[in-house]
Image 1 (cartoon, protein in one colour):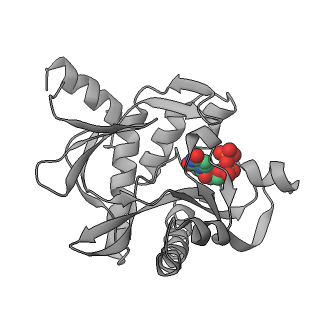
Image 2 (spheres, rainbow, N blue to C red):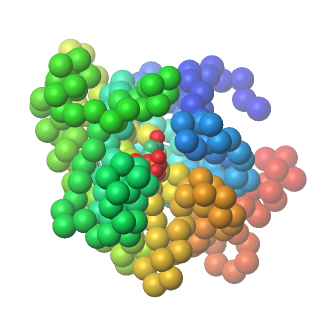
Length: 258
Ligand code: UDP
């Protein structure tokens, strides 16, 4: 393993110091957690797939003008990113009722929402990421009005784009979580999309069968987690043709000591 300085270790990723000031290396682990880390496990190969899927989605978002922290993928599990100051808010975008929305409000799972909902949660594991309103964000100064305006704007753009992207490969984008960060330039900062976009933080259902192809397979003990993530990568055109999967490639490289 490398001897780079570790900056932070989260549940699914590790951040290392980058090669230049203002950059970091984001390493994708196979660890999976659910229910505020009460359930823990490993999904072998997940990190490789999430690195690849997130690279793809962030690149496409960059191409339509959504600013992101992504610079480039370095290898199977790592990508070079811009260092940002993470805004302590999880932004959840919902198109279809599922998860906590169904539990909290009793809306039947699978109900198409008449309009997209954006929700905010305070990023604090000890508190279990409680849901918050704009009022709390303003009151406690977690983000300015202007930043919240930009965040809501970007969340809608990302949703519109991703709904189309996934519809094109027969997937219903049910909901997903985004995180944003401040990119500082002397005394000024602007908000850019950070973290990752992968089946870990999205609900993705097959449009025909309704099959869940995301982290709910782990949360709900459905099995076939890595196959589901692989299916998303395959439909996005990210797996090499033939039967040499991205995961076999990693094993192959490890055997050769690369
Ligand atoms: N989500 C996430 N991290 C979290 C909470 C939620 O990535 O800490 C994602 C989750 O995968 C889903 C969406 O945000 O796609 C909405 O999650 P929900 O509020 O329904 O919570 P959950 O059912 O996961 O507890």
